[in-house]
Amino acid sequence: MTLAIDSETSIGGIAAKYPRSLGVFEKFRLDFCCHGERTLQQACEAAGAQLEDVVRALREPPASADGDARDWTAATMTELADHIEATHHAFAREAFDRLAVLVPKVARHHGAAHPELFEIERVVDRLREEMLDHMIREDRVLFPWLRRLESKTSILSGPPWSVKRPIDCMVHDHEEVGRMLDSIRTLTNGFSTPPGACGSYQAMVGLLRDLEADTHVHIHKENSILFPAGIKAEAASGCRCGQRRDAGEPTESNGTVPGMRRKTCATHDGSDADSCGC
Ligand SMILES: [Fe+2]
Ligand SMILES: [Fe+2]
Image (tube, rainbow, N blue to C red):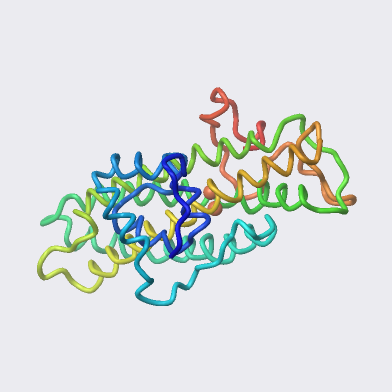
């Protein structure tokens, strides 16, 4: 691919502009999602990768057709939010449904020989709780807010804070999710299975590997494309309160959403997450 990269280009920006780079970054274990603001050089240093090796791989033609090679920087926020819900959120929910059966089963049968499975079970439980709650907040509060920001038929109303506030909370959640995925990678020894592992063990590890890869792309699309577009659209709208609501739409301005568990917002001074709309 033809690359326009200089020393100041962020890895998140490269990933957004050249979707085929995602596979290369994943292969070299470069963090393009939670630390997408780093330059390519900084990301290589953090991962212990050689910059020239990465650039060479980026310039190689793709080995196969990429199923998600669309340039999402050219999409509307509505298109991107719809895509994230239909693909990444749907995939994660389905993965957690399957893991809820597989992980306890594998831990029960193989935990005596592989005690790390009990820790994997604990981390996956926390990850599931965190991600399911997080996706409800995006589906029901933040993504509708972003769609309203680019809607021509909206009126200005809502809570007296910027869209940056819930975005900050989502970015904070992403960092937490990234740490849990790193733990799972370490506990599974890089998503490997022991000799003689049964089918369920192999299916569990394979699914955890797929979940990590999909979540990296998922977080990248939000942190580096969707959220910056929302902040830019709010600034361009001149909206003081930061939220636009379609006329006649049910009021939900306090951010309280049915189905969400109540949680403390770590980003905003430990206030209750419902009250700050995060
Ligand atoms: Fe999401
Ligand atoms: Fe998210």
